[in-house]
Figure (cartoon, rainbow, N blue to C red):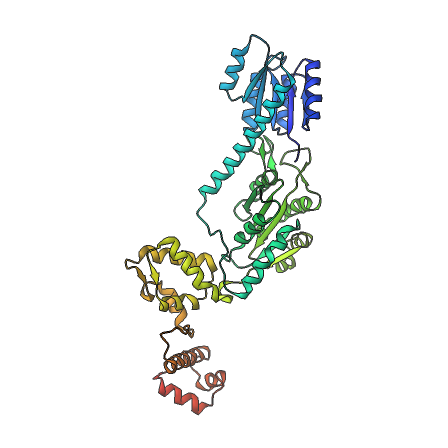
Length: 452
């Protein structure tokens, strides 16, 4: 929506026409009401950026228009027009929520300045509202930290992807950093000066999600007490991030498809189409192709979203990134602490089903509970230790050196125990798994004191 929408409520025809012509020449989209009652009816049907209303009108006065506007569309700015000598009424209107008043007869330049200031105030108010929402959210990692080649390839591709207006589908397990990539794409794009708006599709019931995305008109449903802009309108010119898109109800998927195809939608309970310019970035931890086979996701929507696919690998497939992430989180939560190499090896070898989010949670907890300035293996959660005991831990070679014979023996012993566990202590089958003769396998059992 490039043009601001202005409703003019004025019973004097010549004045109404003058304002309409002037505002259209200024580039605004105008709507007119010949009296207060018609204005009230129009406010029920649509949302306006600015309402210019005369105070004295038949059937309903400007105070009723002001009250109705603030009731059903609090974000709309109201400007009052008052006749000479009735400024007391206009001042009273300002106390009730009007932005400003203009006294008849007025200069046309005065209208231009007041409307420009009113729209600027509305824009700043909207930004402050969004900023408050962001500040209310928990802090997040704003930089993509990596050392692995897999992540390097993804990060290097981001500037090229950001230049496009095409839809992006980011896939990956929960906690890998899908929103982090979406925000990076927005910051690198030509849309960076506009809004980045995010919605978790799994966090809302179907009816409420539709209202969040598209907005609603007063009375569209039980709790719709006022007209509300949706996130698509707020994100106009910018980026809308649809997180957990795989959890979106089928009926709503069809409406998202329509926006992707022609950039138009209707508010819940609305009768007019609204056109927006929004780039869609969607994300999911589900396999959408399987969801399509099960009839839970629309195939046509999948192809419209998956124009540019980005798959973020799980942390266990890029263990080189773990030390860098651990260092970052330790500095974030306890700058005075350090982590030992032994503890770091355990962290590197853990499976991390919750990925980076789980890693951050563990480091935050350990930093909080560890009294010493040194975080060692004893300070780590027991489930990490139990998980890595079944895996061969291969430490990095440092200037202090390692005991290679002992390391090889430890790895060999761990694999023998794992093979026995997989074969339910069947020695012959365990030997086959390890590519050993039965005699060689039995020798190692004795060597490492492994009893069955």
